[in-house]
Amino acid sequence: MIEVKDLHKGFGNVEVLKGISTKFYPGKTNLIIGQSGSGKTVFLKSLVGLHTPEKGTISFDGRINTKFTEAEKQQWRQEIGMVFQGSALFDSQTVEENVMFPLKMFTRKSQEEMLDRVNVVLQRVNLENSNQKLPVELSGGMQKRVAIARAIVMNPKYLFCDEPNSGLDPQTAIVIDKLIQEITDEYQITTVINTHDMNSVMEIGEKIVFLSKGKKAWEGSSETIFSTENEAVVDFVYSSNLLKKVREVHLSKTN
Amino acid sequence: MVYLEHLGKYFLMLSRVFKKPQRQKLFYQALMKEMEDLGLKSIGIIMFISFFIGGVIALQTALNLDSPFIPDSLIGFAAKRSIILEFAPTFCCIILAGKVGSYITSSIGTMRVTEQIDALDVMGINSINHLILPKVIATLFFYPFLILLAMCLGIFGGWLAGVLSGLFTGTDYIAGIQMEFKPFLIVYAMIKTLVFSFLIATVPSYHGYYVKGGSIAVGRASTQSVVWTTILIVVANYILTQLLLT
Image 1: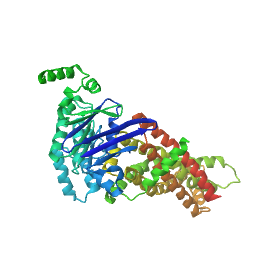
Image 2 (image 1 turned 180 degrees about the horizontal axis):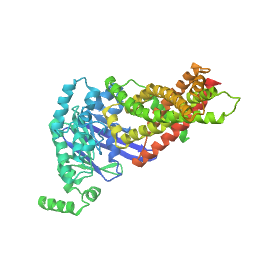
Image 3 (image 1 turned 30 degrees about the horizontal axis):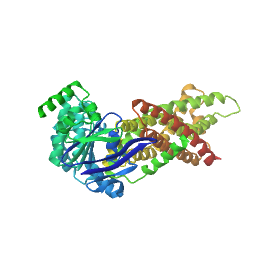
Image 4 (image 1 turned 120 degrees about the horizontal axis):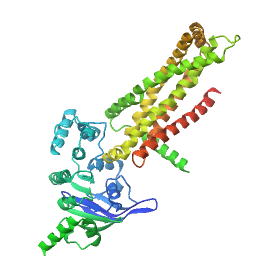
Protein backbone atom coordinates (compact mmCIF):
# COMPACT_ATOMS: atom_id res chain seq x y z
CA MET A 1 0.00 0.00 0.00
CA ILE A 2 1.13 3.54 -0.74
CA GLU A 3 0.12 6.17 1.77
CA VAL A 4 0.50 9.85 0.99
CA LYS A 5 0.23 12.40 3.80
CA ASP A 6 -0.01 16.16 3.35
CA LEU A 7 2.16 16.27 0.21
CA HIS A 8 3.41 19.70 -0.86
CA LYS A 9 5.51 20.44 -3.92
CA GLY A 10 6.29 23.69 -5.69
CA PHE A 11 8.59 25.14 -8.31
CA GLY A 12 9.95 28.58 -7.49
CA ASN A 13 7.05 30.62 -6.19
CA VAL A 14 4.40 28.37 -7.71
CA GLU A 15 2.92 25.80 -5.34
CA VAL A 16 1.74 22.89 -7.48
CA LEU A 17 0.71 20.33 -4.85
CA LYS A 18 -1.04 21.84 -1.84
CA GLY A 19 -1.28 19.14 0.79
CA ILE A 20 -2.52 15.93 -0.81
CA SER A 21 -3.32 12.93 1.39
CA THR A 22 -4.60 9.61 0.08
CA LYS A 23 -3.98 5.85 0.03
CA PHE A 24 -3.42 3.50 -2.90
CA TYR A 25 -4.17 -0.17 -2.32
CA PRO A 26 -2.49 -3.30 -3.73
CA GLY A 27 -4.28 -5.34 -6.37
CA LYS A 28 -6.30 -2.31 -7.38
CA THR A 29 -6.07 0.11 -10.26
CA ASN A 30 -5.84 3.49 -8.58
CA LEU A 31 -6.52 6.41 -10.89
CA ILE A 32 -5.45 10.03 -10.55
CA ILE A 33 -7.62 12.28 -12.67
CA GLY A 34 -7.94 16.01 -13.14
CA GLN A 35 -7.67 18.80 -15.66
CA SER A 36 -4.41 19.72 -17.34
CA GLY A 37 -2.38 21.76 -14.86
CA SER A 38 -4.09 20.24 -11.84
CA GLY A 39 -0.81 18.69 -10.65
CA LYS A 40 -1.35 15.06 -11.73
CA THR A 41 2.05 14.60 -13.36
CA VAL A 42 3.91 16.37 -10.54
CA PHE A 43 2.04 14.15 -8.08
CA LEU A 44 2.96 10.98 -9.97
CA LYS A 45 6.59 12.08 -10.40
CA SER A 46 6.73 12.82 -6.66
CA LEU A 47 5.45 9.31 -5.94
CA VAL A 48 8.24 7.72 -8.01
CA GLY A 49 10.90 10.01 -6.56
CA LEU A 50 11.59 12.12 -9.63
CA HIS A 51 10.51 15.16 -7.61
CA THR A 52 11.37 15.65 -3.96
CA PRO A 53 8.40 16.96 -1.95
CA GLU A 54 8.91 20.02 0.22
CA LYS A 55 6.57 18.78 2.89
CA GLY A 56 4.62 15.64 3.65
CA THR A 57 5.43 11.95 3.44
CA ILE A 58 4.97 9.08 1.03
CA SER A 59 5.19 5.63 2.57
CA PHE A 60 5.49 2.38 0.67
CA ASP A 61 4.19 -0.45 2.84
CA GLY A 62 5.19 1.55 5.89
CA ARG A 63 8.59 2.67 4.56
CA ILE A 64 8.88 6.43 4.12
CA ASN A 65 10.78 7.10 0.90
CA THR A 66 12.39 10.36 2.03
CA LYS A 67 14.05 8.51 4.93
CA PHE A 68 15.61 5.78 2.80
CA THR A 69 19.33 5.13 3.01
CA GLU A 70 21.10 4.87 -0.36
CA ALA A 71 20.87 1.03 -0.27
CA GLU A 72 17.18 1.10 0.71
CA LYS A 73 16.48 3.61 -2.05
CA GLN A 74 18.18 1.34 -4.59
CA GLN A 75 16.09 -1.61 -3.37
CA TRP A 76 12.90 0.48 -3.51
CA ARG A 77 13.70 1.62 -7.04
CA GLN A 78 13.77 -2.01 -8.13
CA GLU A 79 10.30 -2.51 -6.68
CA ILE A 80 8.96 0.19 -8.99
CA GLY A 81 7.83 -0.14 -12.59
CA MET A 82 6.81 2.86 -14.62
CA VAL A 83 5.08 3.32 -17.95
CA PHE A 84 5.70 6.78 -19.35
CA GLN A 85 3.31 8.84 -21.45
CA GLY A 86 5.46 8.53 -24.57
CA SER A 87 6.58 4.97 -23.64
CA ALA A 88 10.19 6.23 -23.14
CA LEU A 89 11.69 3.19 -24.85
CA PHE A 90 15.41 3.39 -25.58
CA ASP A 91 15.26 3.99 -29.31
CA SER A 92 18.69 2.56 -30.10
CA GLN A 93 17.74 -0.78 -28.54
CA THR A 94 15.50 -3.55 -29.83
CA VAL A 95 12.33 -4.62 -28.02
CA GLU A 96 14.23 -7.50 -26.43
CA GLU A 97 17.09 -5.26 -25.28
CA ASN A 98 14.67 -2.69 -23.88
CA VAL A 99 12.83 -5.26 -21.79
CA MET A 100 16.05 -7.00 -20.76
CA PHE A 101 17.75 -3.76 -19.70
CA PRO A 102 16.64 -3.74 -16.01
CA LEU A 103 17.54 -7.44 -15.71
CA LYS A 104 21.03 -6.80 -17.11
CA MET A 105 21.47 -3.84 -14.81
CA PHE A 106 20.26 -5.32 -11.54
CA THR A 107 20.37 -9.11 -11.67
CA ARG A 108 23.10 -11.72 -12.02
CA LYS A 109 20.99 -13.94 -14.28
CA SER A 110 22.54 -15.69 -17.26
CA GLN A 111 21.68 -14.54 -20.77
CA GLU A 112 19.40 -17.56 -21.20
CA GLU A 113 17.51 -16.92 -17.96
CA MET A 114 17.08 -13.27 -18.89
CA LEU A 115 15.83 -14.19 -22.34
CA ASP A 116 13.32 -16.61 -20.84
CA ARG A 117 12.00 -13.91 -18.52
CA VAL A 118 11.81 -11.40 -21.38
CA ASN A 119 9.83 -13.86 -23.49
CA VAL A 120 7.44 -14.54 -20.59
CA VAL A 121 6.62 -10.86 -20.12
CA LEU A 122 6.40 -10.17 -23.85
CA GLN A 123 3.98 -13.07 -24.14
CA ARG A 124 2.04 -11.63 -21.19
CA VAL A 125 1.55 -8.36 -23.05
CA ASN A 126 0.67 -10.28 -26.26
CA LEU A 127 3.78 -9.22 -28.11
CA GLU A 128 5.47 -12.35 -29.31
CA ASN A 129 7.72 -12.33 -32.41
CA SER A 130 8.70 -8.69 -32.02
CA ASN A 131 11.91 -9.25 -30.07
CA GLN A 132 14.27 -7.93 -32.72
CA LYS A 133 12.21 -4.93 -33.79
CA LEU A 134 13.26 -1.39 -32.95
CA PRO A 135 10.74 0.88 -31.16
CA VAL A 136 10.42 3.00 -34.29
CA GLU A 137 9.08 -0.03 -36.17
CA LEU A 138 6.21 -0.47 -33.70
CA SER A 139 2.79 1.14 -33.53
CA GLY A 140 1.88 3.37 -30.55
CA GLY A 141 -0.08 0.57 -28.91
CA MET A 142 2.75 -1.92 -29.35
CA GLN A 143 5.24 0.57 -27.89
CA LYS A 144 2.99 0.93 -24.83
CA ARG A 145 2.91 -2.85 -24.47
CA VAL A 146 6.72 -3.02 -24.63
CA ALA A 147 6.84 -0.26 -21.99
CA ILE A 148 4.49 -2.32 -19.79
CA ALA A 149 6.63 -5.42 -20.35
CA ARG A 150 9.75 -3.48 -19.33
CA ALA A 151 7.94 -2.10 -16.28
CA ILE A 152 6.89 -5.56 -15.02
CA VAL A 153 9.99 -7.55 -15.97
CA MET A 154 11.49 -7.13 -12.48
CA ASN A 155 8.23 -8.22 -10.77
CA PRO A 156 7.54 -4.80 -9.28
CA LYS A 157 5.41 -4.22 -6.20
CA TYR A 158 4.31 -0.83 -7.46
CA LEU A 159 3.38 0.10 -11.01
CA PHE A 160 2.98 3.72 -12.10
CA CYS A 161 1.51 4.71 -15.45
CA ASP A 162 1.50 8.26 -16.78
CA GLU A 163 -1.39 8.57 -19.23
CA PRO A 164 -0.82 5.07 -20.64
CA ASN A 165 -3.40 5.40 -23.39
CA SER A 166 -2.74 8.93 -24.59
CA GLY A 167 -2.37 9.10 -28.35
CA LEU A 168 -4.01 5.71 -28.87
CA ASP A 169 -7.26 4.96 -30.69
CA PRO A 170 -10.18 4.10 -28.35
CA GLN A 171 -10.03 0.37 -29.10
CA THR A 172 -6.28 0.08 -28.41
CA ALA A 173 -6.68 2.31 -25.35
CA ILE A 174 -9.19 -0.16 -23.88
CA VAL A 175 -6.82 -3.07 -24.63
CA ILE A 176 -4.01 -1.28 -22.75
CA ASP A 177 -6.34 -0.42 -19.84
CA LYS A 178 -7.51 -4.01 -19.57
CA LEU A 179 -3.95 -5.30 -19.77
CA ILE A 180 -2.86 -3.05 -16.90
CA GLN A 181 -5.87 -4.12 -14.85
CA GLU A 182 -5.21 -7.82 -15.48
CA ILE A 183 -1.53 -7.48 -14.56
CA THR A 184 -2.46 -5.54 -11.40
CA ASP A 185 -4.86 -8.27 -10.37
CA GLU A 186 -2.59 -11.16 -11.38
CA TYR A 187 0.54 -9.93 -9.57
CA GLN A 188 -1.31 -8.01 -6.81
CA ILE A 189 0.63 -4.87 -7.65
CA THR A 190 -0.25 -1.43 -6.32
CA THR A 191 -0.97 0.36 -9.56
CA VAL A 192 -1.33 4.13 -9.86
CA ILE A 193 -2.48 5.52 -13.20
CA ASN A 194 -2.48 9.13 -14.17
CA THR A 195 -5.16 9.76 -16.78
CA HIS A 196 -7.78 12.09 -18.14
CA ASP A 197 -9.34 9.46 -20.33
CA MET A 198 -12.94 8.99 -19.24
CA ASN A 199 -13.14 5.49 -20.70
CA SER A 200 -10.35 4.44 -18.34
CA VAL A 201 -12.20 6.07 -15.45
CA MET A 202 -15.35 4.08 -16.20
CA GLU A 203 -13.64 0.82 -17.14
CA ILE A 204 -10.84 0.31 -14.62
CA GLY A 205 -11.23 2.98 -11.92
CA GLU A 206 -11.31 0.87 -8.78
CA LYS A 207 -10.13 3.87 -6.83
CA ILE A 208 -10.20 7.38 -8.26
CA VAL A 209 -8.53 10.49 -6.85
CA PHE A 210 -9.65 13.74 -8.44
CA LEU A 211 -7.15 16.59 -8.27
CA SER A 212 -8.08 20.21 -8.77
CA LYS A 213 -5.65 23.13 -8.48
CA GLY A 214 -3.12 20.99 -6.63
CA LYS A 215 -5.56 19.68 -4.04
CA LYS A 216 -7.49 16.46 -3.69
CA ALA A 217 -11.02 17.56 -4.52
CA TRP A 218 -12.70 14.17 -4.41
CA GLU A 219 -12.02 10.46 -4.15
CA GLY A 220 -14.17 7.44 -4.90
CA SER A 221 -14.55 4.72 -7.52
CA SER A 222 -16.04 4.28 -11.00
CA GLU A 223 -19.29 3.30 -9.24
CA THR A 224 -19.54 6.31 -6.95
CA ILE A 225 -18.45 8.79 -9.60
CA PHE A 226 -21.88 8.45 -11.24
CA SER A 227 -23.70 9.61 -8.17
CA THR A 228 -21.30 12.25 -6.88
CA GLU A 229 -22.63 15.73 -6.33
CA ASN A 230 -19.16 17.26 -6.33
CA GLU A 231 -19.43 20.06 -8.86
CA ALA A 232 -15.79 20.04 -9.94
CA VAL A 233 -15.92 16.29 -10.63
CA VAL A 234 -19.25 16.53 -12.47
CA ASP A 235 -17.97 19.42 -14.62
CA PHE A 236 -14.79 17.55 -15.48
CA VAL A 237 -16.07 14.01 -15.96
CA TYR A 238 -19.37 14.81 -17.63
CA SER A 239 -18.13 17.49 -19.95
CA SER A 240 -19.24 15.58 -23.05
CA ASN A 241 -22.88 15.07 -24.02
CA LEU A 242 -22.35 11.32 -24.35
CA LEU A 243 -21.14 10.97 -20.77
CA LYS A 244 -23.92 13.25 -19.52
CA LYS A 245 -26.41 10.86 -21.12
CA VAL A 246 -24.64 7.84 -19.61
CA ARG A 247 -24.89 9.42 -16.19
CA GLU A 248 -28.55 10.25 -16.62
CA VAL A 249 -29.34 6.66 -17.64
CA HIS A 250 -27.28 5.31 -14.72
CA LEU A 251 -28.98 7.60 -12.21
CA SER A 252 -32.48 6.87 -13.58
CA LYS A 253 -31.78 3.14 -13.21
CA THR A 254 -30.50 3.45 -9.63
CA ASN A 255 -33.40 5.69 -8.60
CA MET B 1 24.54 35.21 -12.11
CA VAL B 2 23.10 32.84 -14.71
CA TYR B 3 26.62 31.86 -15.81
CA LEU B 4 27.56 31.07 -12.21
CA GLU B 5 24.47 28.89 -11.90
CA HIS B 6 25.42 27.00 -15.07
CA LEU B 7 29.00 26.62 -13.84
CA GLY B 8 27.79 25.23 -10.52
CA LYS B 9 25.40 22.80 -12.24
CA TYR B 10 28.16 21.73 -14.64
CA PHE B 11 30.54 20.87 -11.79
CA LEU B 12 27.77 19.12 -9.85
CA MET B 13 27.10 17.08 -12.98
CA LEU B 14 30.81 16.21 -13.21
CA SER B 15 30.77 15.02 -9.59
CA ARG B 16 28.07 12.52 -10.58
CA VAL B 17 29.81 11.51 -13.82
CA PHE B 18 32.91 10.18 -12.08
CA LYS B 19 31.33 7.40 -10.06
CA LYS B 20 31.94 3.68 -10.40
CA PRO B 21 29.61 2.31 -13.11
CA GLN B 22 26.78 0.20 -11.69
CA ARG B 23 27.50 -2.70 -14.07
CA GLN B 24 30.98 -3.00 -15.56
CA LYS B 25 29.83 -5.17 -18.46
CA LEU B 26 27.22 -2.67 -19.60
CA PHE B 27 29.73 0.13 -19.17
CA TYR B 28 32.25 -1.55 -21.49
CA GLN B 29 29.53 -2.18 -24.06
CA ALA B 30 28.54 1.49 -23.92
CA LEU B 31 32.21 2.52 -24.10
CA MET B 32 32.76 0.49 -27.28
CA LYS B 33 29.65 2.02 -28.84
CA GLU B 34 30.83 5.54 -27.98
CA MET B 35 34.30 4.79 -29.39
CA GLU B 36 32.59 3.94 -32.64
CA ASP B 37 30.11 6.84 -32.63
CA LEU B 38 32.42 9.59 -31.39
CA GLY B 39 35.79 8.30 -32.60
CA LEU B 40 35.75 5.92 -35.54
CA LYS B 41 32.99 7.82 -37.32
CA SER B 42 35.06 11.01 -37.09
CA ILE B 43 38.17 9.57 -38.72
CA GLY B 44 36.99 10.31 -42.27
CA ILE B 45 36.33 14.02 -41.80
CA ILE B 46 39.53 14.53 -39.79
CA MET B 47 41.64 12.72 -42.43
CA PHE B 48 40.06 14.72 -45.25
CA ILE B 49 40.42 18.12 -43.57
CA SER B 50 43.93 17.46 -42.22
CA PHE B 51 45.25 16.40 -45.59
CA PHE B 52 43.95 19.45 -47.45
CA ILE B 53 44.64 22.01 -44.73
CA GLY B 54 48.19 20.62 -44.43
CA GLY B 55 48.56 21.21 -48.16
CA VAL B 56 47.20 24.75 -47.90
CA ILE B 57 49.48 25.59 -44.94
CA ALA B 58 52.54 24.45 -46.92
CA LEU B 59 51.46 26.34 -50.04
CA GLN B 60 50.69 29.54 -48.11
CA THR B 61 54.03 29.32 -46.28
CA ALA B 62 55.89 28.79 -49.55
CA LEU B 63 54.13 31.71 -51.22
CA ASN B 64 54.80 34.04 -48.28
CA LEU B 65 58.44 33.07 -47.79
CA ASP B 66 59.38 33.78 -51.37
CA SER B 67 62.85 35.22 -50.76
CA PRO B 68 66.31 34.08 -51.89
CA PHE B 69 67.54 34.63 -48.31
CA ILE B 70 65.18 32.09 -46.79
CA PRO B 71 65.97 28.43 -47.42
CA ASP B 72 63.10 26.26 -48.75
CA SER B 73 63.58 23.86 -45.87
CA LEU B 74 61.97 26.51 -43.62
CA ILE B 75 58.67 25.87 -45.41
CA GLY B 76 58.62 22.30 -44.09
CA PHE B 77 59.71 23.51 -40.65
CA ALA B 78 56.98 26.18 -40.47
CA ALA B 79 54.31 23.85 -41.79
CA LYS B 80 55.29 21.16 -39.27
CA ARG B 81 55.17 23.60 -36.35
CA SER B 82 51.83 25.08 -37.44
CA ILE B 83 50.28 21.66 -37.86
CA ILE B 84 51.63 20.11 -34.64
CA LEU B 85 51.13 23.13 -32.40
CA GLU B 86 47.84 24.56 -33.57
CA PHE B 87 46.10 23.01 -36.54
CA ALA B 88 45.94 19.38 -35.39
CA PRO B 89 45.10 19.79 -31.70
CA THR B 90 43.11 23.03 -31.72
CA PHE B 91 41.36 23.29 -35.08
CA CYS B 92 40.66 19.58 -35.39
CA CYS B 93 39.11 19.68 -31.90
CA ILE B 94 37.00 22.69 -32.92
CA ILE B 95 35.81 20.68 -35.92
CA LEU B 96 35.09 17.74 -33.60
CA ALA B 97 33.23 20.09 -31.23
CA GLY B 98 30.90 20.90 -34.11
CA LYS B 99 30.45 17.36 -35.36
CA VAL B 100 30.49 15.36 -32.13
CA GLY B 101 29.23 18.09 -29.80
CA SER B 102 25.98 18.56 -31.67
CA TYR B 103 25.53 14.77 -31.84
CA ILE B 104 26.05 14.39 -28.08
CA THR B 105 23.68 17.23 -27.19
CA SER B 106 20.95 16.13 -29.54
CA SER B 107 21.12 12.46 -28.55
CA ILE B 108 21.08 13.15 -24.79
CA GLY B 109 18.59 16.02 -25.24
CA THR B 110 16.21 13.79 -27.17
CA MET B 111 16.46 11.21 -24.40
CA ARG B 112 15.56 13.95 -21.93
CA VAL B 113 12.51 15.27 -23.78
CA THR B 114 11.21 11.76 -24.54
CA GLU B 115 11.51 10.84 -20.83
CA GLN B 116 14.14 8.13 -21.47
CA ILE B 117 16.36 9.75 -18.83
CA ASP B 118 13.45 9.78 -16.37
CA ALA B 119 12.99 6.07 -17.14
CA LEU B 120 16.64 5.44 -16.21
CA ASP B 121 16.26 7.47 -13.00
CA VAL B 122 13.09 5.63 -11.99
CA MET B 123 14.90 2.31 -12.48
CA GLY B 124 17.54 3.52 -10.01
CA ILE B 125 20.29 4.08 -12.55
CA ASN B 126 22.67 7.03 -12.18
CA SER B 127 21.69 8.41 -15.58
CA ILE B 128 24.48 11.00 -15.65
CA ASN B 129 27.14 8.37 -15.03
CA HIS B 130 25.47 5.86 -17.37
CA LEU B 131 25.19 8.29 -20.29
CA ILE B 132 28.17 10.62 -19.94
CA LEU B 133 31.08 8.62 -18.47
CA PRO B 134 31.45 6.34 -21.55
CA LYS B 135 31.54 9.45 -23.75
CA VAL B 136 34.23 11.11 -21.63
CA ILE B 137 36.42 7.99 -21.54
CA ALA B 138 35.90 7.34 -25.26
CA THR B 139 36.97 10.85 -26.28
CA LEU B 140 39.91 10.94 -23.85
CA PHE B 141 41.14 7.60 -25.17
CA PHE B 142 40.45 8.02 -28.87
CA TYR B 143 41.09 11.66 -29.73
CA PRO B 144 44.86 11.69 -29.02
CA PHE B 145 45.21 9.00 -31.72
CA LEU B 146 42.96 10.97 -34.02
CA ILE B 147 45.04 14.10 -33.53
CA LEU B 148 48.29 12.19 -34.13
CA LEU B 149 46.74 10.93 -37.36
CA ALA B 150 45.78 14.52 -38.24
CA MET B 151 49.38 15.65 -37.66
CA CYS B 152 50.79 12.93 -39.91
CA LEU B 153 48.26 13.53 -42.66
CA GLY B 154 48.63 17.31 -42.47
CA ILE B 155 52.41 17.07 -42.85
CA PHE B 156 52.00 14.56 -45.69
CA GLY B 157 49.44 16.86 -47.38
CA GLY B 158 51.98 19.68 -47.20
CA TRP B 159 54.67 17.53 -48.83
CA LEU B 160 52.33 16.42 -51.63
CA ALA B 161 51.12 19.97 -52.29
CA GLY B 162 54.69 21.20 -52.64
CA VAL B 163 55.74 18.39 -54.91
CA LEU B 164 52.67 18.75 -57.14
CA SER B 165 52.86 22.55 -57.35
CA GLY B 166 56.63 22.70 -57.79
CA LEU B 167 56.91 25.51 -55.21
CA PHE B 168 59.48 23.52 -53.22
CA THR B 169 61.12 20.13 -53.46
CA GLY B 170 60.22 17.10 -51.41
CA THR B 171 63.82 16.89 -50.14
CA ASP B 172 63.73 20.46 -48.78
CA TYR B 173 60.39 19.83 -47.14
CA ILE B 174 61.59 16.65 -45.46
CA ALA B 175 64.76 18.41 -44.31
CA GLY B 176 62.50 21.11 -42.84
CA ILE B 177 60.27 18.75 -40.92
CA GLN B 178 63.33 17.03 -39.43
CA MET B 179 64.79 20.36 -38.33
CA GLU B 180 64.74 21.16 -34.55
CA PHE B 181 62.39 18.38 -33.54
CA LYS B 182 61.27 18.91 -29.95
CA PRO B 183 59.34 15.99 -28.42
CA PHE B 184 57.83 18.35 -25.83
CA LEU B 185 55.79 19.98 -28.57
CA ILE B 186 54.04 16.67 -29.16
CA VAL B 187 53.45 16.37 -25.40
CA TYR B 188 52.08 19.91 -25.40
CA ALA B 189 49.74 19.04 -28.29
CA MET B 190 48.58 15.88 -26.49
CA ILE B 191 47.91 17.77 -23.25
CA LYS B 192 45.81 20.23 -25.21
CA THR B 193 44.01 17.38 -26.97
CA LEU B 194 43.11 15.72 -23.67
CA VAL B 195 41.73 18.96 -22.22
CA PHE B 196 39.77 19.71 -25.40
CA SER B 197 38.46 16.10 -25.56
CA PHE B 198 37.16 16.46 -22.03
CA LEU B 199 35.38 19.68 -22.99
CA ILE B 200 33.98 18.12 -26.19
CA ALA B 201 32.43 15.29 -24.16
CA THR B 202 31.20 17.14 -21.09
CA VAL B 203 29.97 20.56 -22.27
CA PRO B 204 27.56 19.17 -24.93
CA SER B 205 26.47 16.47 -22.46
CA TYR B 206 25.60 19.19 -19.95
CA HIS B 207 23.54 21.07 -22.54
CA GLY B 208 21.73 17.90 -23.59
CA TYR B 209 21.11 16.58 -20.09
CA TYR B 210 19.50 19.74 -18.74
CA VAL B 211 17.50 20.66 -21.83
CA LYS B 212 13.88 21.64 -21.15
CA GLY B 213 11.11 21.64 -23.73
CA GLY B 214 10.74 19.86 -27.04
CA SER B 215 12.53 19.42 -30.35
CA ILE B 216 13.16 23.14 -30.83
CA ALA B 217 14.79 23.32 -27.40
CA VAL B 218 17.01 20.36 -28.34
CA GLY B 219 18.05 22.14 -31.57
CA ARG B 220 18.79 25.32 -29.67
CA ALA B 221 20.78 23.42 -27.05
CA SER B 222 22.84 21.76 -29.80
CA THR B 223 23.77 25.14 -31.24
CA GLN B 224 24.58 26.55 -27.81
CA SER B 225 26.70 23.55 -26.92
CA VAL B 226 28.82 23.93 -30.08
CA VAL B 227 29.26 27.66 -29.44
CA TRP B 228 30.23 27.18 -25.78
CA THR B 229 32.53 24.23 -26.48
CA THR B 230 34.32 26.26 -29.15
CA ILE B 231 34.65 29.27 -26.84
CA LEU B 232 36.00 27.11 -24.03
CA ILE B 233 38.46 25.37 -26.37
CA VAL B 234 39.79 28.73 -27.56
CA VAL B 235 40.12 30.04 -23.99
CA ALA B 236 41.70 26.80 -22.75
CA ASN B 237 44.08 26.91 -25.72
CA TYR B 238 45.27 30.36 -24.68
CA ILE B 239 45.69 29.38 -21.03
CA LEU B 240 47.52 26.14 -21.83
CA THR B 241 49.84 27.86 -24.27
CA GLN B 242 50.62 30.47 -21.67
CA LEU B 243 51.23 27.83 -19.01
CA LEU B 244 53.20 25.32 -21.07
CA LEU B 245 55.16 27.30 -23.63
CA THR B 246 56.05 30.61 -22.04
